Structure formats: C-alpha cells, structure tokens
Image (cartoon, rainbow, N blue to C red; front, side, top):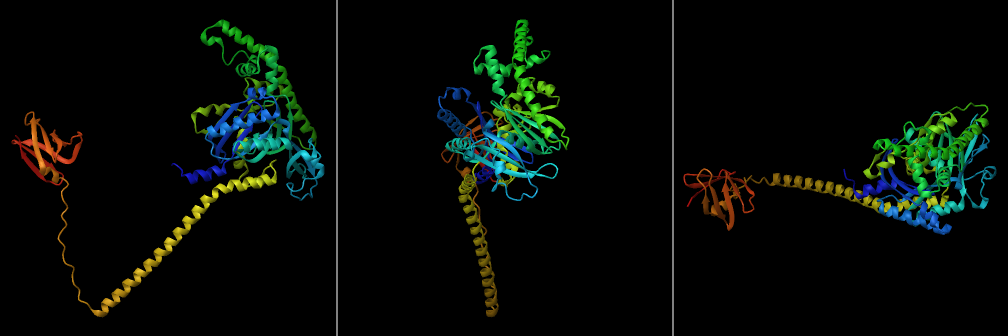
Length: 536
C-alpha cells in the first residue's frame, strides 16, 4: 500500500541516517528496523582516498568531505535529515572508571574529577559523556566516551553543511557493538568484537552483553596496503586491488578463489599462485601483529579479573579488512579462538537490487550501528552516550519536531472540524425530530381528512437505441448468409456483419444484434426492440 506524504514524513522523522566519514570511504545508510529485523531503504558510498591525498591542507580535506557528502545526500534519495556519525580511531576513546557503591549522581550532569583525568586530551578541549553501570563483585563502574572537541566540531560542521541534522556522535567501537547486539541479541557469553578499519583497529570485550574494555591500536587495513606498496612497488589504488584480489589466499593454495585453471591456462595458474604466495609472505607479518594485539587485549582484561574467570567464547571480526581472503582463518589460528565475520546486512531486505553487494560486506558494521541508533536505544535518547553537546541535542530535537508542526496542526484542525460536524448533525436531527412531532400533533388536532396523493403517470424512460430508427442502408456485400450491410445512422457510418453492429471505428455497439433474413436487415436490441429494414 502506498503511504501518504504525511505518513512518509512521520516515518522519516523516526529514522536516522548513519553517516560513516571514513578515511578512505564515505558511507550513508538509511534503514527501517523493527524487532531485530531490517529493511534497507537507501545506501550510498563513495571512495575519497585519492581526493584526500590530493588535498593540500586540513581545510581542503574538510571540503572533500562536505562536497562528497552533499552530493551523496542530494542524489541518493535520502528523506531523513537527522543523522548519527562515528569519530575515527583515536579521535574518540572509551574509558572505564571504578565508582563507590554509594554513587547516586547522574553521570550526565556530574562526572567526577578522577574520571575526567582519564582523558588524554586537553581538559578545556575535551567533549565527554558518561554512563553509570554495574561493575563486577557488586561495584559500580562508569563508562566514559571522550573526544577532542575539534574532532566533534569538524564532524558537526560537515554534517550541517551537507544539509543534515547531527543528533548523535559516538565512536566506531560503540557503533559496531550496537549493530551486533541489535541484530544478534544480547549475548550471554563473553565475546571480543574487533573492527578493522582503514587506519585503526578497535577491540571491544563484551561480557554478558555489557561492554567492559575497549582498546584502539594502529595495525589496520592501511598497514596491509602500505606493505603491498613497498614490496610490489605499486600505487595505493593498485595495492588495494591486489589486497582485494589475492588477500592471504597463499595461506592455502589448494583452493584459491580464482585460478587460471578455469580457462585451462597453466601459465596463468602458476602466475596467480606465485603472486598469492608472495602476497601471503608480505602480509603475514602485519596480520600476526594484528592477532598479537588482539591477544594482548584479551590477556590484559583477564589479568584484571583475578577473582572472576572470563572465558572468551569467540571473536567477531568487522570492518573492510575482515573480508580479506583467509584473514579470519589465520587470526583464529594465531589466537586459538573461533572467528565469526559480522556482515550486518546479510539477512536484511533491500529496496534496490543495485545495493545487494552490501549484503556480503563486513565494512558496513559501523554505518549500520549508526543507522540503528534510534531503534537500538528505543525512544529514550538518554540511554545512549553522545558527544554532541546538550544544547546541540536540544536544538536537534526542536528541529526534528518543527517540520511536523504543520502536520500536527492539520490533524488537530481536522479532528476539531469532524467533532463540530458531528455536533451539528446531532442538533439538526433533534430539530427535525421535534418538527415532526409538532406537525403530527397539529395534524391530529385539526383532524384533517386523509387525501391520498394523486397517482402519477409512470415515467417513460427513452430507449437508448432510438437512434436505430434513423437507419439508412447504403450497400450490401455478399450473400444473405454472410452478408455485410453498410449503414448510415444519423450521419455516421456503421456496418452490420456476423450478427453484430459495428461503428465507424470498428468497435462493437453493445446491446444490438443483427441478421439478414427474407431480404431484410433485422436488428434486435437488449430491450427486445426490433427494427426491420428492406435491403436494396
């Protein structure tokens, strides 16, 4: 069923655009979510690595984001204006601080100085938000999200200049955790969510559905790309192509993704295999370093939980590099834990077939978590961490409601008009009833004799086939059995053939049957009228 403009507007106001301003790609996603299910309404992505490399200053790079995002929004058919964005890598960090059990204050209004001191940024240049949650052994713990104020301001400026309304600013690890929990439910096991971005990798240890430790390090997709550039002597774009084509398939040559054997070219097979082996030799060092950092994160967390044994059930890999061939297999072998690759849109319904490629991509974990921000947190934005200033949050809420005021006023006026109509109709009915009762009483008082109404002559409905009386036969073709009679009726041409009457456009005149018998043309109508005309 096609929705009205008002219905589409109200639906759009409850949705939020996920905007991933990556260091190599911008992604924008709009979804409709309900009960852990998703329908992808719109998706767009643009590669900007080369544009960023050509930019000379920070201001130029800023303009690249603004111009590209503006074009994506205008050409992508996105109808929501509210948006959520995640800051990259070390721009936004998550820290945890122990609190006394008696702590009662609202963390959003009062963050202890001891917690503020955990920020690596200048105190007057730090944006911070916090949540209080239950810790281990009956303690309280504060989860803090902190960022450099300049990074927050830059992201806000980019979104506003692109015509969007910033409503939520978080970091990548929170976005991925949010997407995974919404789509897979709250895990009762302890897992490690690893998001391998372009410049940084974030590891998030989630214990019984609660984030307990977040760490960011610099071994990520760009480290793999730079290694390929150095060894093969190719450009960044070519290195990215090599990485996508070969990955780490040299780790197990018995089943390469694509070989020359498909075309029967043994030389191509040998070249492919030699390149794959060389690629594995180039990348195995950075990949082992990546696995080592993940292992260190787990060991450091477990060493702090001396009184509680924490068994990690699995590692969830996300981010563009998680799709690299054989990477999950090698990382799992290095760490000794099961690996799951998180592809958030794998089971989502798509609006357009041209974005079906997104269904197999793990690079969309961040933007999916951002697009699900409202659905994941319900209707209460106070439940989520948000680096957007409180004043800006209130302004965004007002702007979100302001376009809806005409719609709301229209609905109120329509309801008021309907209520007035109902009251008016009731009053008219009461007046008519009272008038009827007065008339009845008056008639009985005067005892007027009943005068039956004069019978009216039955109304004669003119025949719709009266025009047939003006029939003139202008010619006859064929024998009596298959005769074709040409007629002129009221100055228009008709043809009687095969028992039917056809007008000058060769369209059948409904309700008229024709036949030739006894030298006459006989036409019978649906009203059982018969018209006879002698043939010349």
